[in-house]
Image (cartoon, rainbow, N blue to C red; front, side, top):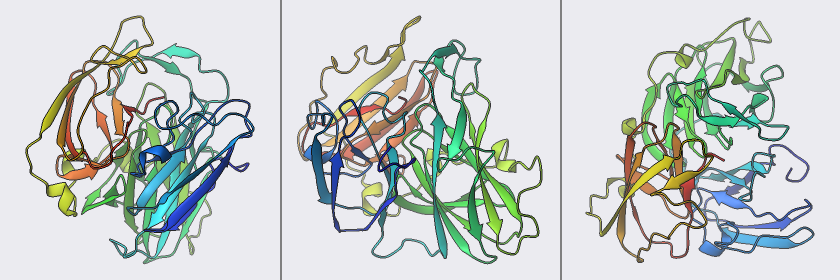
Length: 380
């Protein structure tokens, strides 16, 4: 845990402030902290053997950088399975001038709970994972560290505009998130503002974040549900409750309509509001990458290579770079680029789901943050 808490305490700063975090390692193995999504200077990125030496037990390291741009981020260990063991927390950089109007906000951290060893089990097949895919069985799905039987309470008042910062640092769970009795208006994707779009549900992969606005106009107690789309059954749950609600808890069996139907947000729905999201410049350099696995193997590969033996993708500062990915595996891959935002479709992000079974995604970015950067799937 960070400071004895799970999830770690919310770090909240204002856009443009200088943030200093002292990491003191009290666990019996080396660790680091990665500031997921924030384009920090390379030496502050927290990737062992790439941007820094891991912090050994009993040692400390100081991370310091200017907190920008504004948005909903997270921090987590980038060593082995430490994220899965609880070393994660939300980082909120508040806007100098908010992009949307709201009266109240909540940070909603989705997670999967693994208390024992990650014993692999055979998948049963679903829309996103084919038969034979392997992964650990998680004991529960959580919102803000709490299981469905003991949900986190989000209190609101009638007439409020409520901002929910949806953050997914889970290790191997993609959530379909919906709120009973309400629709959601997506206003930020991976911290960057987008044209508001009203949906019934949001699909949020590991490493992704979406900010949504909920119009509190339907009094009562309502389930906010995040359902795993992978091979396992189960859901994370919180309760959104109006101050004047006659019931303290949602009706038994209440389930958001958006979990099984309605309009589901897709990346192609997103349109960024910032000039960078409309850059039409042709790429100076293009990489065509194949994501794959091997039968009867727990290895995952980019062009047949696995980190740390993979050859680096060499680029030059100032270039416009295009990355085209084809996923030949049976598992979706939320691909995350450190140190940069990229343009995918008409929006800026830094984590994007590449669908399985020959799914394809292309993104462009400007090489404006020099250093050695990790580019990887966020499925632990």
